[in-house]
Image 1 (cartoon, one colour):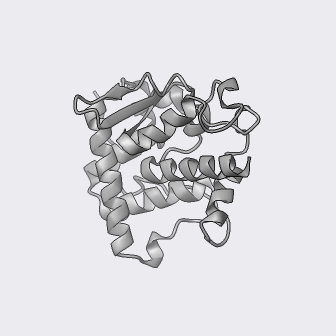
Image 2 (tube, helix red, strand yellow):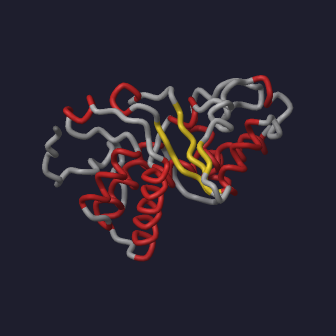
Length: 211
């Protein structure tokens, strides 16, 4: 039971750091995993989730994974993670086969298991992703990362929702990793996430004009 929670917590903490998504992971169904788009090389995967907080504004939430990362989700979706793993329609679930209602608790268990201090939550992770993008990416790259993580932009853009393109999605992943690597190599006080609210990803970016 504890092993299952830690395993789930590590993945649920890792994916938001990689993608900037927050509670999308808890609403990801097992069917979303095999329904993903796969590159011809068989090493890259785009998973799309229909049910999430900003679906009306941004459409499906999409994130790209490599073969190892996708294998983690596949293992869970096939019920190999725990005895009651097959009883829940959601990919991330409790050891009792129920949808996870407090994902922050699960992530914090993995956080503590890894020897980290203090508490972590999804707002802090998302704020850190935003801060790193602001500090280390170009305006165009920040915009692409913001849209990929369903970060609120200009109200007008909410009416132009399209199906996520897998090539654009994967390039966004690369930009996110770029920001993370640059932030790791250049630690500073400015890179620390705020305690209570998300860092606005495009705070200094002019409003975009839409046709």
